[in-house]
Length: 421
Image (cartoon, rainbow, N blue to C red; front, top):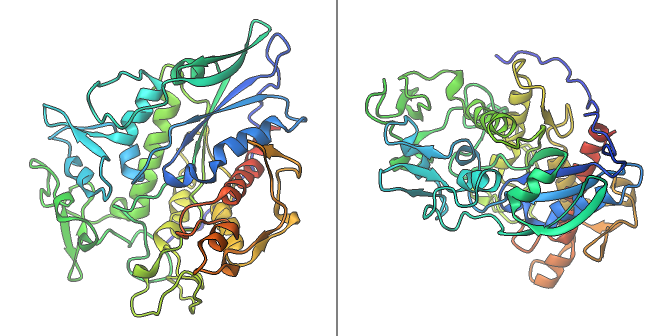
């Protein structure tokens, strides 16, 4: 049984000063963490530009991209997995190539976490490992120092150190290898939703020898489930969304405490809608714009990806933890589906002038923020031009257009404003 949660408090100002000791704008770094969705439509640049064009704010914002491709979740939480680590084989669940690499000692390294460490510690960290997981060698960096505003090309870490305040923006808890879902179809992702072993590649199921349960599997009700902590029993801690919340909290704590120039605050939102969900609706004639009858387990009337939808339960679980570091914040307190709901509206209804928080007239890279957006459902799937021109999603119904980038930036902008007062 789920306990009723107290209503969360609203966003509180972070009290970041608007100017430094010399009267120059305070330099605020925005560390963007996530995978493909966080790069689509260039939402980070649009958010940066919108904040910098808000005259009432007055601070200077710079985005730092730790975005990478492929899976998320588990592989953000830890850089190195030794052969004796109980989770050593879990890395093998990744469905995308290049997500991990192995050194001469047999240690497995998470590509995305190694990229983050290289960004915040040293770009030459662990040379020769995961060579594709590198950060941009230089970036244009504008900052104020001793009363002088300077713009120059610096390395990622060098520019990061110039920031007066540093915020991490996490827009991705999604992982195709360890998906969150209502596995028992009771209408809610709760502590009874363990990962069915059948959903996980066999190579990733076993724990290492020396654990209480080297097989990494527990049979219950005739079904094999993943025993995440390898203790031989299924408990709340093996539930998919609880485990996921633990990964996200581990990443957030590291960002706050484990680097020489740590972030001051972490903000989290689950990612927006993804279509392409036909495999999740067996027996139904499925299409990206087809309508279906909602059920408790699949409560949206489109063929969406429910593994992304149910991630809001990860956020709810994480932010109900009374011991959570107070510097870890929901983007929109009490509304973990804000990003999802806005993207759904763009897909099947449309966006109107009243839906925007970013002021009209805001420009990013020469592109004006749109006003009225025709829904993706209005497009013609036989016409790729139409598919990319309407709505917020590209023709693959998963990734986002420039308009979709504005949509995501707008949700971030509206969520951050109360914190930045």
